[in-house]
Image 1 (tube, rainbow, N blue to C red):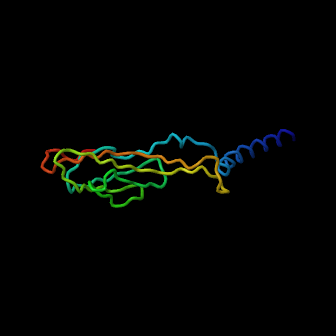
Image 2: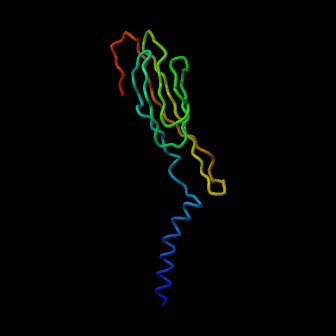
Image 3: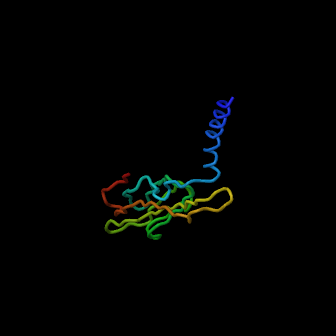
Length: 137
């Protein structure tokens, strides 16, 4: 009879332990997680558009290093479309940054760590419209 109770206890522990981690939370490697943008570099000309996608985050916020060089169709979401609005005399680079905030919280809304912002960057080279370069990924 004693063996059955030990087996039952171990069986309950095997079920309850993973649930406890879900409810309480545990430290994960999100502090070292980098947001990935695909493509992370491209070459485009005036008027061309490029779709960018982000991975390894939750809620994404996008920004541009120079708002006069191009536009984003949205500033929120996993995927955005960037359109070139510049025809430079020589190649110039636009840096597109995406960020995602990670919160370490439990079911009560409190957490052991402050929010951590993770970022990723894509480098878009604008070339003169008459240049022979084509869009690359």
